[in-house]
Length: 176
Image (cartoon, rainbow, N blue to C red; front, side, top):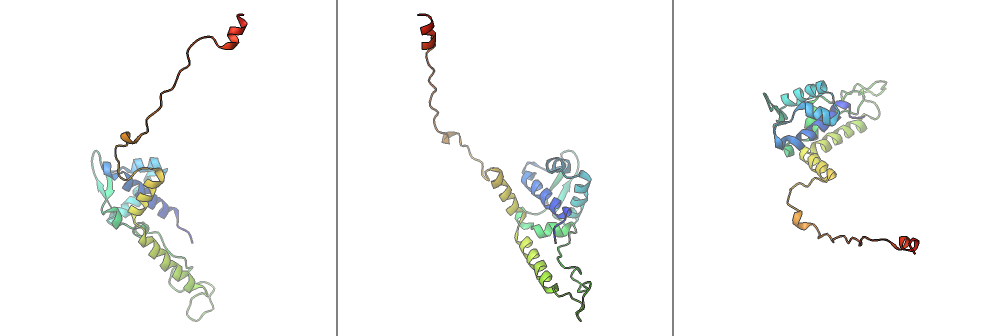
């Protein structure tokens, strides 16, 4: 089981949006350029995110997208579910119609294992907020969460001494 490109791109684009929305609406063209995701693909993803009220669009000059909710109120599970990403490790899609089964209940021998994994995945992704990912990204990039003037914190620089100009000893010997 793996997360497809759709889910990965949606989460990546949402982190980019959340990092930059403080300066105003974020354009999909900007996200596309920074994250190397096709603009038309982003338009599809953001249409779904908008319908699930995770983002809101701003029309006109200076338009783009903003979060429709606070970053701490949006989970990774919300994003993935909004873009129709299946979170399912079972072969049967959770329906209990596993292929090649000889069990009387229609489940394969490992159905319960994969169903439990599905439940744990959803629980974990529901516990990680967009704000958590933004904070993690800012700390990775070394961007302080709270900006402050650090000019007074810099250590004093020692002046560099310049040697007096004049012939050095090798040239003095040649002249003797």
